[in-house]
Structures are given as C-alpha cells and as structure tokens.
Image 1: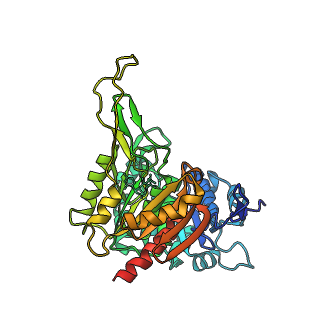
Image 2: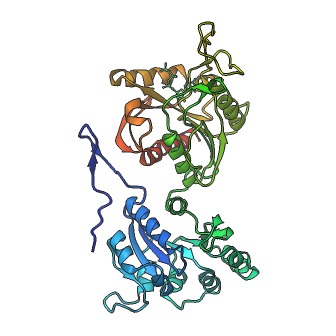
Image 3: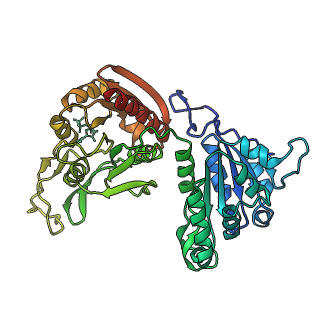
Amino acid sequence: MTSVKPNDPRTDTEGERLVNAATRLLGRRITLCVSGSIAAYKACELARLLVKLGAKVNVALTRSATQFVGAATFSGITGNPVSIEMFEDAAVGESHITLSTQSDLLVIAPATADLLARLATGRADNLVTACALCARCPIIVAPAMHPSMWEHPATQRNIEQLRVDGRVKIVGPARGEVASGDVGLGRLEEPEIILHHVVAALSPQDLKMRHVVVSAGPTLEDMDPVRFLGNRSSGKMGFALAQCAAQRGARVTLVAGPTHLPTPPDVTRVDVRSALSMRSALWEALGSKLDGADVLIMAAAVSDFRSSEIQTEKLKRNPNTKIPQLAMNPDILAEIGAERRGSVPLLIGFAVETNSDALIASARSKLSSKHVDLVVANLAEKAFGLDENHVTLVTKAGESKLGVDSKSNLASRILDWAVASLGDAR
Ligand code: CTP
C-alpha cells in the first residue's frame, strides 16, 4: 500500500523550513463516501486534495461505486484501507459506527439520485447511508446525475427534505456537460469547490456577520487600444485571503484587477482594470462614510503610475510620435486611511519591496503614512506569481515573522490577527 506523507516539512531555496506546508485540514478525520456514478473518478482527485491539506481520509464505497472506481485507487491515495461492507471486519466491529463516530466530517461525493432518495427517507441499507444516519458531525453532499434526473420532482422533493432536516449541506450540482454529452444542471461540483466547503465546515466561524473587502491582483493602465502598463502580481495572495475569509463565515467582496484566477465560492467579485476603477469599486464597497465594511485588506499591487492620456488609436512608431507622459495614480489605501474616523474598518495593507534590507523600515513607514493597522511586508521575488510567500506582520506594537508558508496558510494567519483585533475593538 502506498504510504502518503502529506505534511513532510520542506525547505525553501535558502534552506528555511517551509512550516505547515499543508495544515488547513491537519489532523482532521474525514470520511469520503462514494456512490455509483460515472463522476466517481473525480472523488479520487477530491481524496488527493484532502490528503494534501493534511486530512486523515477514510473512504467508504457503495457496492455500485466499485463498478466505477476500485478500492485500491483510494487506499493508494489515502494510505488507509477502504470500507465497503457494514460488518466486514470483526476486529473493527460495525464499520458505519466506527467511521461516523470517529470522523470530523463526512463528504458524500458523488451522491446519486438513488442515494439522495435513501438519505431523504433515512434508509440505512448500505455502509454510506448507515454512516450518514449515524453521523453527528457536519455532512457535505455533492449530487451528480443526468439533468433530467436532477430536475425530476422526486429528486427535488428529496433535496428539499434534506434541506429541511438541516443535517447536510448540499454542494452543487454544477451546470455543464454530463457523461452522456447532454448539457444541464447535474455535473458533480469540481473537487476544488467541494474542498472549499469541507475547509469551511471545519473552520471557526469567527468572521460571521463581518464584511471583509479584499483587493487583489495587478491594475493595468491602458496607453492605447493595445498597450498597457502593468505589474507581475498574480492575485493569488488576495484570492487566498478572500477565500479564507469566506470559509470563516465573512461576507466577502473581492475587488480584483485582471487575473485568470477563478472566483472562490461564496465571494462577491468585482472586476476592475485600472487603479482609478479599483478606487471607485472599493469606495462603493466600503461606503462613502466607510461604514460598509469591518475590514479592508489591500493586497492589490496598485500601479502608482498611469499614462497621462489614453490614445484612441494605436501609437505608431515614427519620429513624430508624442510618447505619453506618466501621471501619478492616487494612493487608494492612504486616501482611505486619511478618511477613516476611529478604528472601522480595520485597515490591512501590504508592502512589497525588492530590497530586503529596506523591507521592514518601508513597511513601518507605510503603517504610519497610510494610517493602517497592519502592514504585511513581503519581497517581490518571494511573492509574485508563487503559491508560497515569506511575510512579516508589522504593527505599531512590533513585528511578527510568519516565515515561508503557503499563501492559503498565510491568509489564515493574517485573518487570525484581524479576528483578534476586531475583538479588541469591540
Ligand atoms: N496602494 C494603494 N494605492 C496605490 C499604491 C499602493 O492603495 N496607488 C496600497 C497597496 O495595495 C498596498 C500598499 O498600498 O497595500 C503598499 O503598496 P506598495 O506598492 O508596497 O507601496 P507604495 O505605496 O506604492 O509605495 P512605494 O512604491 O513607494 O514603495
């Protein structure tokens, strides 16, 4: 059997320990239940993602699921034996009781129309339905079936019943092409989306009733219809912050410069292009009195300069071309900091530098010049475009080095700071 070690400490290029490479689900016990749908193959990817985030994953298959994907695949991915029968191992006893009582969360993906019917009527005729009936932990159900089966009043009645019972969270199905080639509502949600809901279900809901506004990505400043000034920001840090805040229960508005990143679930995204359009979108989200949000996190790499004029025709390369001058963009965060009265919203800025010697001093000067509560200091070469970052939190009270970590873990730790500060402000 393959041995899976998702949490091996790694090192970055300078030999520093990459701590907590995969901790969002570290030590959490998750039972992944799979029923007999063609989409069962996607459950393999879900199992891999859960393991990658540190979860201890056990898999329970219905008999029909084994027609689509084998137990060996899941035991290979999870490093744990797979259960199919309720009373298969005398040493373990009743598998459904053991699995459900020892799990922090059950995720049923894919859940067929038949399985939904059995869950809705409280049947316990196989390992998966018995686990669901027995479990007192959160249960996520991700349906997958042909769109005609999903639309059928019987399925809709079953889904409604499950919603009314309030014991499970339904994720999906998604709209798109199903195995038969037909298009409609019925596809299993993508594994990354199901994973988001798993993490949310196991996260503290300490940002509930809070509105968190996050800016992310670069801004692009047009010069003419084909050229622009931009920067190398990928948006990954800001998107990780938005996703993590949503997982912790916040209402999240993400003001995003141009990036190809998908919108995290449960996040309201406002797409912008230039610094000026980002500024308008942020004021809209915060309200003119800045009373529309609890927290603003400016993770965007806002361009400090724009072309003084935007040509309507492509600039031609000839000696007579008047090369446009640059104009200074407003400093959005400084403007908001200057306008804020009291401590709402909590203001978190970033400081990006290319010179490591100047990093902390620059962050500290931004802390006071922009009137913000926290500056997250990072170096461009260790941040831009990467899945990991190396940051130091700088506040009036001092500095805290978070070291090298995944952007998702760092987002969680920045939000820990925000939650503690919001508590202080009450
Ligand atoms: N920022 C902003 N508006 C700008 C420039 C930056 O709101 N026109 C915000 C960024 O989103 C970030 C913080 O200010 O949270 C610091 O950005 P950074 O690029 O590190 O520094 P600058 O303020 O642009 O200053 P400098 O380039 O001189 O270091």
